[in-house]
Amino acid sequence: MRTRLFTLLALIFLSTGTLQAQKAKITDPIDLNDYYVGITDSLYQLGQQWGTVFNQAYKNKDFNSLIKQNKMMLSFVERKQKEVMNQKDFAGSENLRLALLDFLSYEKRLINEAFLPFEKLKTTATEEQIQAALDKLVDVAKLEKEELMKVETAQREFARRNNFTIEGAE
Image 1 (cartoon, one colour):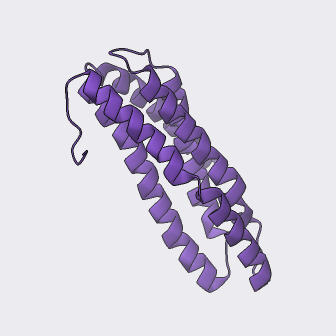
Image 2 (cartoon, rainbow, N blue to C red):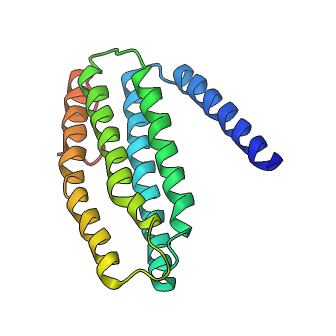
C-alpha cells in the first residue's frame, strides 16, 4: 500500500514537472510541431505494446495483463489532453492544437470502448466473446486513420504558415 502511494505521488510530481518543462521548451513553431509529433508517436508505440500484450493474453486466455497497459495508455492520453488544452496558441497553432485534441479524444474513446472490454474477459471466455470484443475493437479503430489524417493536414498547414517543411511530407 505504501509503495502504491509513493508511486502515485511520484507520478503526480513527474507529470507536473513534465508539463512545466514542456512549456519551457516550446519556443518556436518547429518545437511545437515536434512536441505534437512526439505525442502521436508515443501513442503509436503504446498501441504496439498493447498489441504485444494482447497476443500473449489471448494465447494464455488471461486478459488481466491488459489492465496495466490500458491504465498506462489512458493516463498518457489524459495527461496529454491537459497539457495541450493548457497551451497558448501561437504562430497560427490553433487548428493544429484543436486537431490534436480531437485525436486525443478519439484515442480515449478507443481505449474506453474497445480496449477496456478485454479486461472483463475471464479465463473461461469463449471464442465468441473474444471475437465480439475484437469486432468492437476493429469497428472503433476504423476511424483512427481518418482522425490522424486531420492532425497531419493541420500540421502541414501549420508548417506552411511558418515556413518549414515536414520530413516525409509531399
